[in-house]
Length: 303
Image 1 (spheres, rainbow, N blue to C red):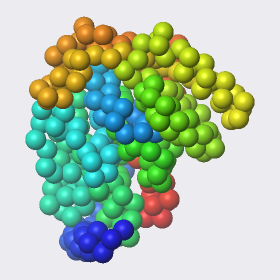
Image 2 (cartoon, rainbow, N blue to C red):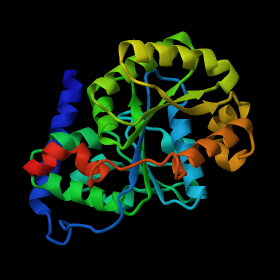
Image 3 (spheres, helix red, strand yellow):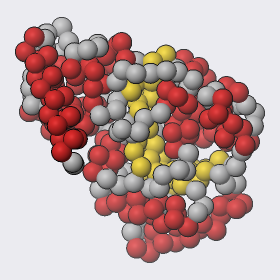
């Protein structure tokens, strides 16, 4: 971290601490909720440029269209663009909640098809580093927010950095998006190896810009390699074919599932959402704790 980043972080923490003194957590906020526990899905990729955020957005829309309440968390620290892809103009994020400039409910965006978009930005990591009673209040608010939804979709960062691994390890399910490019396949296997070492139980691969016939050799190869060296089976959820409509959706800032739901990619994503939501391929929440409490387990217990 360079000196400019360090100075910015120090200023932010100073503002947070100042706000905490004036806004001590109330007993009304810190309560045990009996609401549902959302199923958390972290969308990850070993390599950038494979369409991770587009997939996270359209998967969220498809689940919402199926009657589920969905919150999409932009956890791509410093590079969040879900608001732009949704045709929205977001400015406020979780860091502004930490400083007291905005309340949590004020930063949540009303996204397409009824989904909620929670801009995390740097506030997610700043909250982990925060040393104050204000941390407990924000964690409780985020937990109660999460419990209002059926699905909590996390648009995670790229690669296998510490933050990315931690977000993935806290989710119920990891969807690892990959293309068929050699570099992407190599990075996907590297990520799979890391998640296997972390003992994640539900990691599924989705191949983007590829049909099942074209992807079959890559699928067979990664399964064979994983059995030989990782002693595990690879769960491939499915494939999303190359589709010019997906690229066009970036230019028009109108999500694919709204503009061209019956396009090849649109139908594929709808099918993937249906698989995730089916009784035979259901996601099981790990333990009786929401994603946010697992994410900040150490900080929460120490608060």
